[in-house]
Length: 570
Image 1 (tube, rainbow, N blue to C red):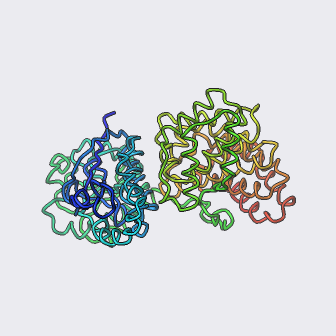
Image 2: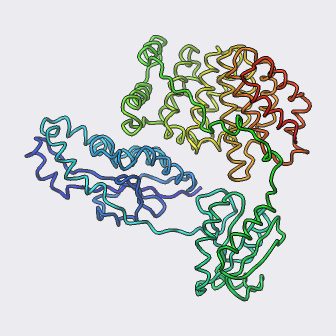
Image 3: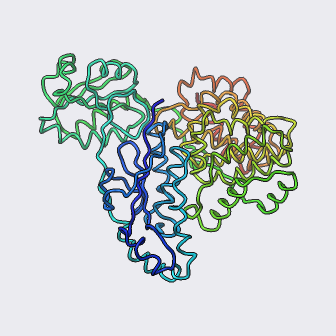
């Protein structure tokens, strides 16, 4: 697959003054005050007043002093843009620090994600090099004050690139631009719900409808495919669809035309699109139910953030003969993140970490050594950047190795426990979760279902947490995009959850999470009468299983009643 080139732009904020005067001021030769950015797919990304985007070479820094070819990235553009969005939580405007959290930390993280390479060490190491000198420490406030207006100035916006025709998939773009009749016909045939706006570059009234159409496209993203056709650029479309005036709108459901109208009235447009959505997606019977305990639960993933005594773990690993520099770097990353926050913690080389974990598993390292390694992995995975990196690892080979290892019944239960907790923590990365179902469904299902029936209560609790995270994400995709993402694992998981509910006699917390997960899996499930999910519920007598728990766990009576309502109304 051909990728996009990734370039590192290097600027000297001092414009040559550092080279001339650094020895005089701080007693050390410094060749430049380095600012870097990443150019990817026609845009320059950098950190200053937050994460900023500009036309390459057109930022307020001028032309780069040097351009470094970092390689090519074959990652999908949507994945890259989502990752950059996730970095905005770490690289906020108020978090900028010239010495501790600057543009070079941002480009380091982005280059590691795109191509798995570090930016030059003389750039990332410059702040510490300056601060190690007495004059550097003394002059730090003055340097920061003089350079902050330069580093945090506004960006020159990058040009907006409208997408060409592509199959309708969830993406950052809400409106598709189509230029041929065959493309439009294929789109109408292959999507459940479609709205087409026939416009032209010379149509004045059309501009009145543009904002409302774009607003509706964003509002119903994932439910309806919104299309714009400029008939001045697509003559064959205007002939095929007999478009004699603009603006004209057509709507379709499953390839059949539902309605058409002319005129630029925004209220009429909104009313007709709302009718289209109501017909395409009739209200589900479950929406009539009051389910505050199920639907009122926070949809944020359950995570395990406790940090073990890392010094003792390293000593234990050393005793077992497991020593490696990457192990020390990951531990340093965890401790710095705990002490100073994510923005102060530089990512370790995750390629090396992944290879180290696989090597220990495949090389037959003792189990008492592998357990703490997976536990360290668990803590590191709390950082969204770690989860995002493993979301794009080739064939998910590291996670496959860990899950396969933990699924062995002969391994100590602690291995299974920390692996379940690791998987829960990976849900902090919204890039990772879709891959979890698409690529790791069978392995995930096997581990989760067997763990829900484990003899150890803390393993069952972790497994119920993973079940909740899985079904909560599936429910969000069902509600936001009318998309079913659990098909590959829902049947096995459902059967295990029902059996787990029936067996659970110790932990109200485990039972609560299982009941909530079951409710989320069932709520507004499509094709209920013919659904395999409800067939399994009936065959396993799920309603009777849940009913029996009402008397055992009085505090969960209301939650049990809500799940029973869902089971009674398919």
